[in-house]
Image (tube, rainbow, N blue to C red):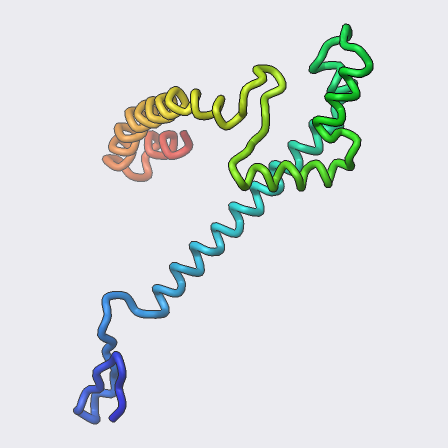
Length: 165
C-alpha cells in the first residue's frame, strides 16, 4: 500500500481515497487557472485600450506641436518639440516606447499642465476614491430596499419591475 498524501481505507468494500489537505488539488488548480485567465484578459484589454487611444491621438487632425506650442512658436521650437516627442518615428515605434516607459512607471509629461502624469494622477486619486465610495453607498442605499421589497413578493409585478431596474 503506497499512499503519499492520502489515506487508503482498509475495508475492501469501500474503495475510496481521502486526501489530506484543506483544498483538493483539482479545485486549487481551477482557481489558479481562473485567476491566470482573468489576468491575461486584463492585460489584453489594457493593451487594446492603450493602443486604440494612442492611435486615435495620432490620427487627430492638425499638428500636435502647433497645438501644444501655439501659432506664435518659431520653426526651431517646433522642430525641437517634434524631435523631443519623437513625432518623426512611426506610430507603432512611439507606442512601443511609451508602453515600455509606462511599464516602468513613467507615464510621460502632460501636454496641458507640463507636470508628470503619474504625479497628476496621484494628486487626484483621493478625490476619485471618495467619489467611488460615495456612489457605491448611494447604489447600496437604493439596491438593498429594492431587493427586500422584491423578495417579499416573488413573481409579483413589483418584483419584476425592481428586477428590471
